[in-house]
Length: 314
Image 1 (tube, rainbow, N blue to C red):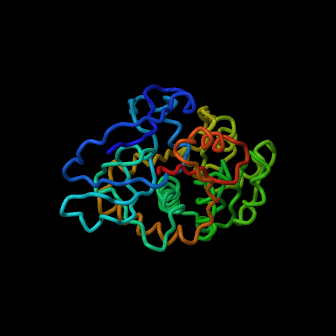
Image 2: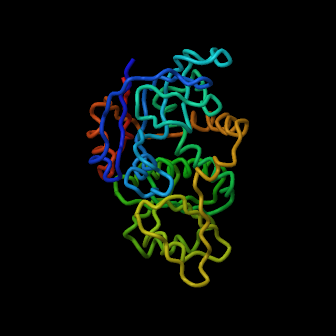
Image 3: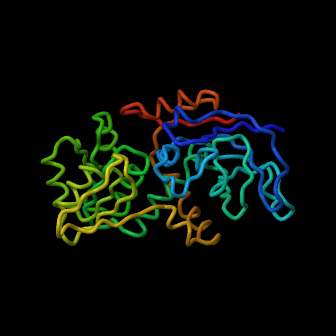
């Protein structure tokens, strides 16, 4: 039995260093679940490690991808009831491949009424957004988001509105994002409108920043002393520079939460997430066969895109 996978064996631009390779499958390790992957989305968190940004903890050669949906095809006796079930095979080998052998503790069973396109995207962005709002509740607060229109920011926006935020403002890069943000109950602001960005920041109680760089710095330095600034990404590739007496940024990385999480808490988070995801508005997906991964990356990088690229592994 063979397995096809997207490997990176050195750091660099994903389009330059990823390779679709075929290898022979070895026997399934005792205690693992063997999952045949069906689909996996492309997220910034999948691509950034390939560039070498996290070379202190990411060591190629590796299969890319952190989330996806598959069907259990083999398991030990203790988990044979999962054979034929859809699962998210998480926190193990890369998911941009046809077959994964993963730890059953971290495999998340997918409810029957959740469709494949939603389930395949049910981990990285939803869990990050859910946990941030548990830690920094939005009820009654003025919330400001950067990278508005991105998957995680859109979920933060929807769930903050639903939780009773006083106001949700989203700073966007592409004008095409503005109409969809308004539909979510978000007040959109163009990041090039420095005066509006600063004015909104000065009123904000809670900021979720995925950009960093000059935008994150401008927001941080305009905040009131009692506001919260949560840095959960660095899409600009540039750090934040805080002025003296500025609010201290608080860092959120999903990985930090996972290191201290046991199986019961992990599975409990997903029981909380599925109802939220059923009611959420997510962008459409555009599906690509695994062999067309370069086209999928090109869509991901296109400005103002309105759909999420999804790799189909068969």
